[in-house]
Image 1 (tube, rainbow, N blue to C red):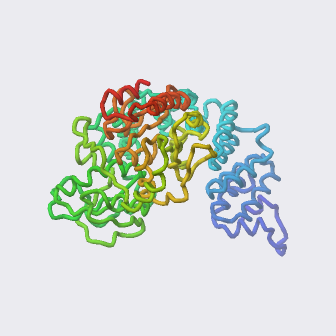
Image 2: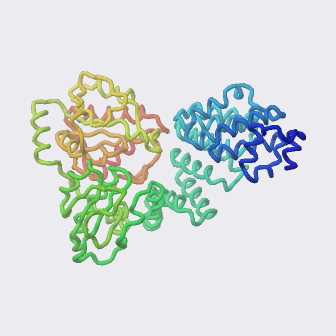
Image 3: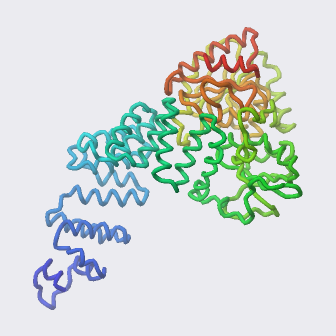
Length: 534
């Protein structure tokens, strides 16, 4: 017990142990941390937090401060524990009083991370900026600032900081990922691909990095290499506990389907599944009994795709309750059908709303004589690229000044919707995509950002104008080429990152022409190419 004597001095044998003595005695092996040293006491506090002994941890941390430990170091330990417990607000409270004149850049790194976890990205960036002012070579702060800038749409800053960080550590994985993202948003596609190639060279077994390279290759329409790389996305199934990674039957890899039941498991976003539904009839032609497994709000509309024999609800907690011979992830279909620009299957219309739904919306809008235009200005706020996919409602305000148009809100939920005299909103009635499809089918034209509404409208054969940020997206093709997936789609790109005004100006110009009698869209390459050049 020499360590106790060293810490507390020689005490009378009959004297009861102090709470700190009792704590150390109750935790075998902790004496090896030499608790007479305040730095070791700080370590002991962290150990006790990890053992879920908060009272003991606080007792030890207070003792450490009494013995000369700097209080901010105890705050760091408390904040790290709060972040591990997914309590970022608690972590920020632990840092109060230490951020005005921070003694160390780690305080600012942790403060930024707390704000990040709270969704306060601009504040996170400010904390990281302050941290770099103290320690300009801290790779963790540089990498975090790079990511924060990218999340709030400051892509030039994200790119600049990534370059700076990689001078400190050229193999820093998170920063390389963020450099690839920034290069994509700035339409530097060669650099995006080269960055992901570097990641794959450095970390050849990492599926995430292979998948990122796959997206970069698809964006360049290098389908021969891109589709196989895209197959490395299975890590998402495992990370999200999707039981696709543990399905009992084998995965379909192109074998004969004659007389077999094929389970098609819908994955990723709703728009992705609308896009690949064009191949469901092809599976039937290969001799399969086709069963689609999807979310409830997709079931009705996917059930009507020709060739689909059955639709079941996707439940990730159990094996599907039916016999099937093989399964395939829905986004693997382009790979298995070896899709290229030359052989793409692009029917003008392959989705249909239900008859009753279509009749309901037809009766509702039949007396409207103006041009009927559906609108979706924002996507899923939880999407990792929401900043580069979603406009604000204010960005589309110029459209409401155009005469001769009745606009219909197609977005659920309707983010930051404001009332406009010529805007109709029936969002309470848009419960499933079948409902939305019925309303879209009554539109003369749909204008949408890059979200599921764009895919749904184009798959219904409606003239669809897709407003995208400056960055390309593999589903719509390179900036200088027409869309191959949907004959009635046009792309209106911003002329710089997030400059939505530049795209809406062109949309408004073409809307005026439509009101004046020009067609809303044309399937020809010339018409679509003109929209690219606008």
